[in-house]
Amino acid sequence: MVQFKYIHHSCFMLTTEKDAIIFDPYLDGNPTGVKAEDIKVSHVLVTHNHGDHLGSAYAIAKNNNATFISTAEVANAAAQAGVKAFPMHLGGVLPFPFGKVRVTPAFHGSGIAGGHACGFIVDFYGTTVYFAGDTCIFGDMSLLAKLEKIDYAVLPIGNTFTMGPEDARLAVQLLGVKKVIPVHYNTWPKIAQDPQAFKAAVEKDGVAKVFVVAPGESLTLD
Image (cartoon, rainbow, N blue to C red):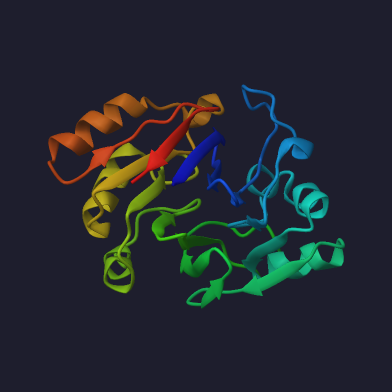
């Protein structure tokens, strides 16, 4: 049984009884007070090098001897900091002990010289999750649906720095997904959004169901 555990902002974990991985582990100010030393994972996936996404990734990776997965420039910086890093890049698709990782485009700053922001499509013990990362909407999202059978799409809705609710609503249609989880909203006033309004709008389209997961809460993925 796979669970989605939302920490806050864009940070979440996918867990089973025997394994866990974490995405964009920015922990500062999370409402349940989770700290790096509380996190037990086998892999750390980071979409780009901005502080609100890289966050506590180095500490978590070192504490767990976990593998840090990101684009080459971000992973190489992690390796220089003493982290066990595994560099990939856009278009890369590789097996891992938990399943598979595909690195997807994301249109956003990388936070590091020569780098590129990314998203991930992860097969985690048979459940496939697309984490868009920080990105605007882009037409080639429709190609992702042809490359992978996505069970859940984790999409930013904050606007200002990423796509907002209306664009994310259209992204749902491009992706052809049936289940959606919004993230990257309400951390600060500049990305304040109403996730329930997003849920109502998407579900009105009759395309997908939206699961609003509060920080600190979990959702069982079926």
